[in-house]
Image 1: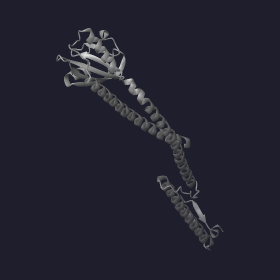
Image 2: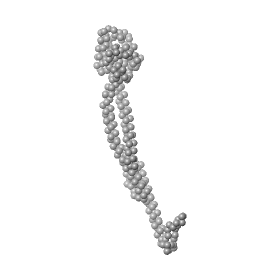
Image 3: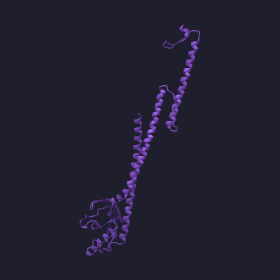
Image 4: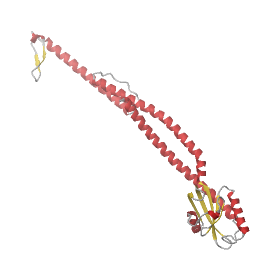
Length: 284
């Protein structure tokens, strides 16, 4: 019983603690990821402002002059030095320039959510998978107007895995701290569970002794908890039973002595007419 109780208590505490730590780690990781994604978008916004302050010089959309096409590619590479992927897209989705892919091989971008939002609101963002480079990216797009009055889109992107690389040391530290807490708390749970099961075992032994007629009191743990109160109650019950039995024994002995010393013969029978007492005078 002792081992079974100890195992159940320790397992229950351990499962509860593990569940709490998993929940805390999950929500902490989500909060960190959300914060770093927000930081990633803030960096893209900063790059976009720099790009808008020095936009590509396009007299027509799409550019037709070779020097403008070359200048656009140079501008794209220059802005991409910030670490972001740069894409220039017309209002109808035609890719004019991209810092990581050949725009001639890229599909129409008119249906991209950040492009649609930027055309409608002036800027747009999304987190999604890029079919062109097969990676998850953070996208931020802004609407720009050419000297001819035609709108086009400047789009900036960071790989989402870069966020994961930044988060990895924090996640590793969080997991290490959780494992350390789990180890320390697990040891504490084992000790507390063992102490609790030991006290339950002692109380069980006391109740068995009382049932067998041993009314010796058990020392209290002086913890002030429910088990301590139960221990005091068992001690008081055992003491009352001991006093009651001693009193009954003394009364029985006294009655036997009185009846035994009487000159007259005395016979006591029970309801079943069986002899339960007879003094010496009656026996004679």
